[in-house]
Length: 68
Image (tube, rainbow, N blue to C red):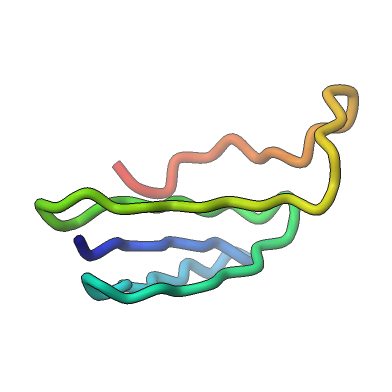
């Protein structure tokens, strides 16, 4: 189904709607808040890759709600 991707960078919110049956590739740097929501009635497939191993002492995670 279709999806909504929301990214916040430099205090600016950007919404990208992904149509059903389309594939998009995003490169999102560490510590950039982002969220993904299925906005349709069909399942979505999300594949995520990371090039840097997770370091629990220095997490690259930002906890922020961008989509309710």
